[in-house]
Image 1 (cartoon, helix red, strand yellow):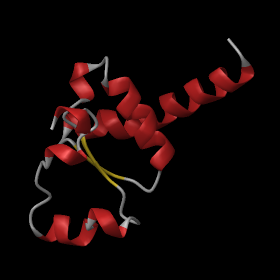
Image 2 (cartoon, one colour; image 1 turned 60 degrees about the vertical axis):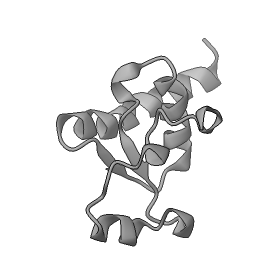
Image 3 (cartoon, one colour; image 1 turned 30 degrees about the vertical axis):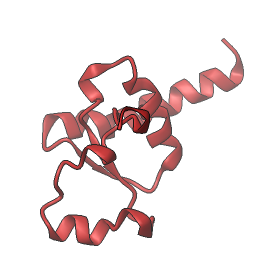
Image 4 (tube, helix red, strand yellow; image 1 turned 90 degrees about the vertical axis):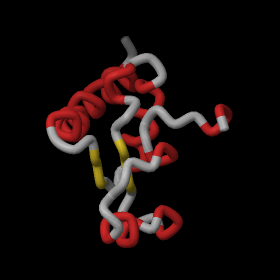
Length: 88
């Protein structure tokens, strides 16, 4: 295992707590960490349990995070870790 892959594995394990908490509660994550979201999207391709976790970045205006929260933080499938736009 290379230094880079060890570092990435360590970061994923640290961020895994966000996903674990989401799975134990309402399946929602609000995080500013796009790298972590990308990592978990890649993992979701082979880990079915996390595919329905909804991930929203509160800094991205295009995700309309305030509107999403005000309207009940619905499970929009395009926000899930398992979303694959090629399946639309």
